[in-house]
View 1 (cartoon, rainbow, N blue to C red):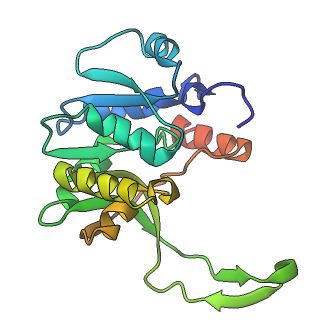
View 2 (tube, rainbow, N blue to C red):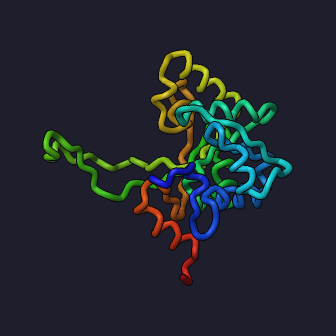
Length: 213
């Protein structure tokens, strides 16, 4: 984002970005503890942004990659039967979506919020010439939160680390899928955009402000 600070601390609609997701997790009756994984050296800054230490929240340093950061967070969830992984760059999280994703794990190894693809997909060739039109039937956009049986996510991360592919993962669900885990898609049924570039900021702030704004 070019802001010179961790994305989670960026002011969005008047608050640090991460606070929007933390509010939803705090309001969820299904969440017992929150592990906030932050860039190394930023723990104190993050603690101040969320109003100081709080019961039920642990702040840990992350790693150089997404998977390494998830592993660091997972290490702080000792004793948990299930874990929920959420990217604070998706600030429109709601307690309802948290509940639906956790319910989606019933009878399988994991579940993730997702949206069906509605756009026509093109595969680019040399010089950005269209090489093919890709059939979008059955294709979904993976989002967060993602929830897992804790032991299966532990197994998936350990296997990826052992096989040298942990840094290639773009989400946790793909790690669990790679060890033969069964993962269910849960339609998010809502706007759940990710703040990735400055161009995303206007849309996200408008959605956070609500339909009357």
